[in-house]
Image (cartoon, rainbow, N blue to C red; front, side):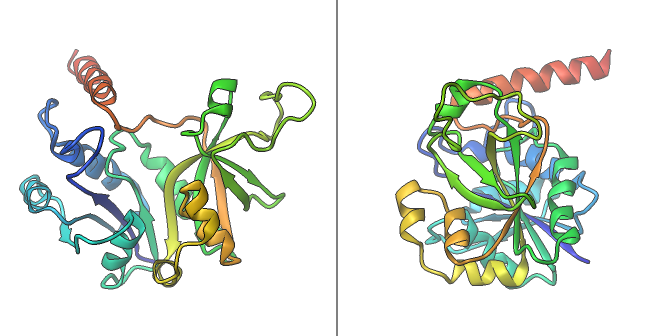
Length: 253
């Protein structure tokens, strides 16, 4: 079965313009993400989907596979759907272009969720919440699941709400989960999703995955232990550069 990892990459960013082409490590940020994706055993194709010629040229420069897409897409989902229409892949994995430390084994786990459950149209990942700060942070998206590991709802609000006191983050299996923005889709479902108008719940919470639940479709949720931090701000990138430099120094020692 062919499984394509598609990495959407835009030049524009409110908090960190041009971040795919940041290169303080000697490699473009998008190159770090691409190389991580190539380490996933499940990947038969790894593609960078972009609407910017500078990113297209940079990916081609380091030997990656870029695909030029339209510039009027409202979301990364729409961008990867455009690419998926022309791919002979059964499953499409969407890895964000600002995740240079994402674990390749987690991508294999993500794809495996769909390979092992034919009833799920889509899959994603989550990590246990271990502190109240994350639990109440609206930028940390939460997910609650049923007994079969399928999503019941996603929200920026604290869910499930601990009505009688503080939440117990030690409960096992974990009840309080932070959603990670990485997805796997069956190709036909991705194309249907991209052609479906946004749902009011999606527009209210600003969470695309709520469109899937509103369609009556299922999202399988896999658990991993640790979420690597993405690069959203200049300080995030500086932290990544420090971590990468330290890792390279240890390797050379």
